[in-house]
Amino acid sequence: MKYFFTCLILFSLSVAYGQSQRIQYNVIVNNDDDKLQFDYEVVDLDDKSKSTTPRNIDEFLVAFFNDISILPADKNQPLFYIHGMWGGKKFAFNRTYKMMEALYLENEATDIARIISIKWPGNNMEYKVNKATLYEIAPEVTEWFSNFLLKFHMYKYVSKSYNISLDILAHSLGTELTKEILCGINYDNLEYPLIDNLILASPDLVTDVFETTPCFTKNLCMTNETHIYFSERDLTLGVSNNLNKIDRLGRAGPSEKSSIPTNVCFIDVSDVKDETNFSDLMTGHSSFRASPIVSQDILEVLTEQKQHDRVPRSLMNSEKRIYKLVVDEDQ
Image (cartoon, rainbow, N blue to C red; front, side, top):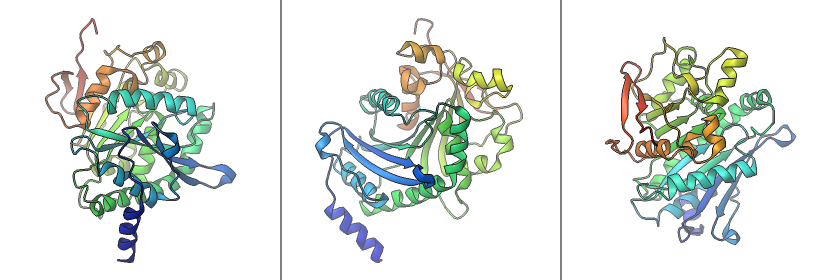
């Protein structure tokens, strides 16, 4: 009860950010001096002087819910973003955020108002170093994320933001971190999904992850729906197949023997070639941020639009629920 009243006091003292339409919420994971630390920042992109650095997760979430509480009910949803390799570097993060802002926040059809990003230390030039770091930090990040989930839903009810749900979008190597987080969470005693939609974009996971990692398969029940986007023309993930003879889920889709949970489906975007810049078009690895067609399909998932009239899908495999985006040749 004491903690509950502390929450109420925090809400009464917190600054409301809702006057600005461009507020960025970042969680920074630092592993300096071999000790993991979680820092927080609330960035007002319109007026940097109003930006703050909350001291802990409670102040961070209180600022967030105070912010969205005064936004329109049809545009107040959050999107939690987990970047891939090098995605935490300042230039790469700012570039991606700007692209996501245009596609997911400024789109007239969206109900998403804020992006909460977690910046994890995956910025080494060597892939193997980043992957080793990922496994090293995963237990503490999992503990943090479990706490975040529980407090997110607690503050949701304290602030009476009953319509707010949590969607997650993870990209590339960030999907491996997502898998480790899901595997580390004890979901047995929870009665309902804590995550609405989970988007795995160009997942850097093995194709047989649903065979070899039962904890991942089991704990996807934490989500109402999980959508996995893959492309055969993903050159970045194709390197793994060429060098290591191990294909990736984000390039080839699920293995033949995979048993897919009923709340999971795959979206093949191999035919989409409308990326807005040359590098993303060539690699085919970042369509979630660079392709208007793919981002529109993702947005329809996140906003729970079922008609898919703007981005038609064709069912390719009913057993594994694999769909393919149907696009015009002159896209």
